[in-house]
Length: 146
Image (cartoon, rainbow, N blue to C red):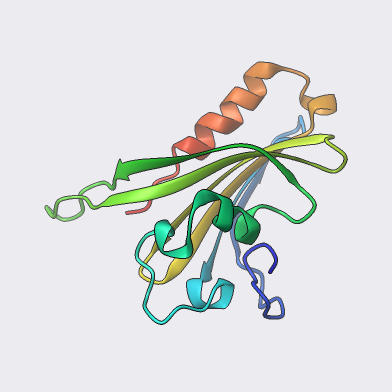
């Protein structure tokens, strides 16, 4: 399986938002119908339905990347129209790719059968500052589904 596509051929671009800074940092948000990533008999409502952080990493972390750390965090989604928020699990990964030239952070979550992924990547040779990577991490950790 590959990033967001599973074993299916790549569909139209799942990328919904991509932001790029002049210093080489990028932030992207994409979503795919969860059943195209990993077929299940039921509609997955939480990322844990796809497995452990280690198992999900194989589905969402870009191919050829090395995961250098991960965490599973629970967050309460924002309340909408007076309804109380829902507790949801988010898997957050730190990884290196392109012969360790790039450092990235990724957050994955699921909701109503959809798999959502936020990816932030920076090139240490271009960025060159620890603060920039902390900013990328902060952006990824702020990712929340409604």
